[in-house]
Length: 71
Image 1 (cartoon, rainbow, N blue to C red):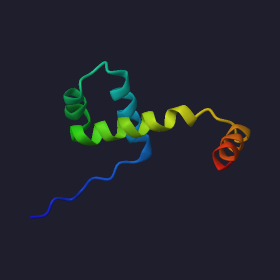
Image 2: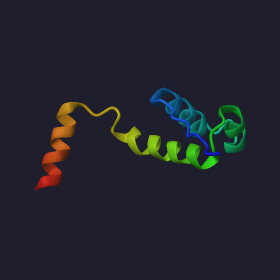
Image 3: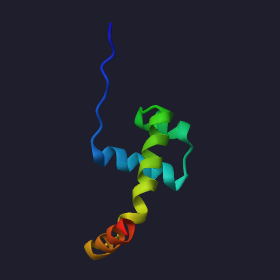
Image 4: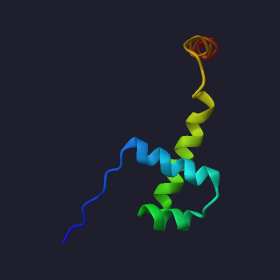
């Protein structure tokens, strides 16, 4: 019998990632609570931490960074 893979929406992923970033619970506790593999939680945490620095950029800052990178 084949196992059906679960698909999680962005809201769920971000909720779990924030919990992992807070580090108030261990990854194993989050795994038990949300029913998601520890590796997946770690991946979501890394993805969230990668985009946080750019989350508050304005459109002007994005354009300036693009121009600086292109020169």
